[in-house]
Image (cartoon, rainbow, N blue to C red):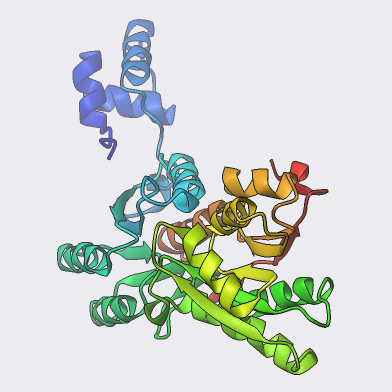
Length: 342
């Protein structure tokens, strides 16, 4: 974290008294031209930014927020999240608040648990995290609530108490995907729900999407077969080849940002199919523009991350109230409107 610059630091670099620095910063009292120049030079050298909140507080409290997100180097979906978080950190850098970002391995629940437990022990005023693993997130929230630490989540909503959440209605998201599929479905069509490289039984976001998708077809197209395929191998092409041969599937709903892996596998198999999935990864965008993916649902990860962090920051700094749950609109992207998102 960037070191907080104090009046004492400025006085030392400028070689003037603390009182002189105080008069320059707050523009009160007389200061010689020489001293003014020395202080201004020191402010520039130290890249000092005034703290607009400090004037309104009796005690200059420094709030601490920890953030726990999946490592973007291991899953590129989280790159925009990190960008959104960094933008908020920069926006509030002049305030008395320390924000630390820690990364966990999105393929290892134990990585999430270990870092999360360490953060609970060290303590903070707030913890913002992605509840990627349901069981581990429930345990972490229990510990945080006992410590009376302000909690925030984004991407998927955990089952137990959280003070603030930003994301989508994932059940409704699944129904939207089903409606998109229903517009191109044929009487003989068979539909496959594809989960790639995640433990579905511990991933509430994937289960909610599947539940919403299945509910829509149960309500409107009960005679169509909807099958689920979990792919936990790097060879997506081989897994899909067997699935297609056995189940005669020709429509695919992919529940994660790895939609492009299905599209490229179908291309290798020379299989024409309708593909609906999630997120604006460069690979997904390319497949969308080439007609290998028909629709993408944009989950706005950058906006989710920045909104959730900003709300926690303003709660601590200004005691600003925010909704317990802030749901974002579900955006449907196709080959015609994708340019407006790039």
